[in-house]
Amino acid sequence: MKQVTFASRHHQLTNINTWTPDSQWLVFDVRPSGASFTGETIERVNIHTGELDVIYRATQGAHVGVVTVHPLHEKYVFIHGPENPDAAWQYDFHHRRGVITENSTTTNLDAMDITAPYTPGALRGGSHVHVFSPNGENVSFTYNDHVMHEYNPAYDLRNVGVAVPFGPVNVSVQHPREYSGSHWCVLVSKTTPAPQPGSDEINRAYEEGWVGNEKLAFIGDTLSVKGEKVPELFIVDLPQNEQGWKQPGEAPLAGTETTLPAPPAGVVQRRLTFTHQRAYPGLVNVPRHWVRSNPQGTEIAVLMRDERGVVQLWLISPEGGEPRQLTHLESDIQSAFNWHPSGNALGFVLENRIAIADVASGNVRFLTTDHGNPPSADAVVFSPDGNDIAWMEETAGFRQLWITETGL
Image (cartoon, rainbow, N blue to C red; front, side, top):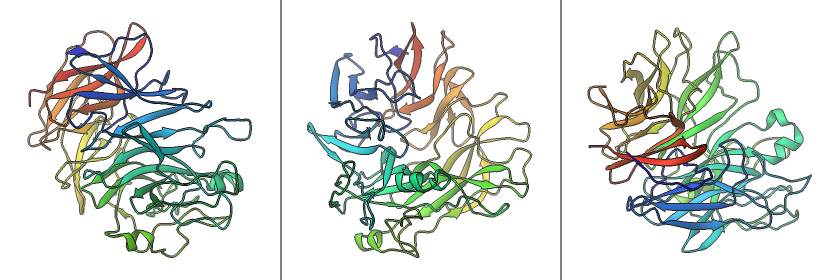
């Protein structure tokens, strides 16, 4: 077990893809806490030498954070807040964008067009938690919509989208906050403000994860027959070519003045879990977690409570069927989790320690001792070579980065 950062400031890991492909560097932002978006730099630290590099520094009053790395190249994607924020336009769920930095050059990922008629391939709001697909070609994100927020905030529902390399998307700028982007962006989830109780309809799509390169799984909030929120697991098959990404479905890709952007033709979400009748229905929102597929794309892991109410890891096929309970723990899993690159284990926080569960047996092994402050619940991330696992921990009042060997 080894502390990697020591500076008297916070260091924030994203929940996946926080390592460079060579497993030598951890990338992070410097938000004072996960909730406030006021960091000005994206940085990386060498796990062996402690050397620090600044990858990007924001200017003009903008802030940046939530960085992830391309699986094959030193290419970084992260959230960028608005430059020169003012009373009318400041950082918010619907006022932010993705940018990609490679070789010291930074470009907008998503375009922004908030003047009707809207531009297909552009967004109308804020993208968030950008994650490359396993082959590095596409980027998933969650999304909120400025146009709907202005029209009626109740219609600004969180959704899941994908950026694909079929741009650029050039916007004819008619508003000072509009801009062009390098990637063609669409939403792939469908939400409704008032889901039919007991149906597959959802009013929020979030915490997505790639399933191979051609599917995306996410949590969708359904309503029980009694009208209570029940988060369930959904999956969507993605288009296979440029034409598929650009073909509108039943509604305009870019949305209208009274409707959200809509998925491409044939992109229809499927529900995978049906937990309304369980003693503890739904996937858990605490701890916050992102659904994660194994590298083989054959099993998706989620957190749900067992019949005793204990938060456990469960696995389900992307094709559906009954979820398989992997862990049988006495106390709750306490964090987001990730798969080991082999697909043979999952890492998470348990009993205030870093632990891994064997996927074949469900047996749990602890990698750290209880040595002071508990690891953060936000991120537990394996290195690409599988040798190390990283997390955050409060140390002398600041959130620092730690690693330990996996033994796998």
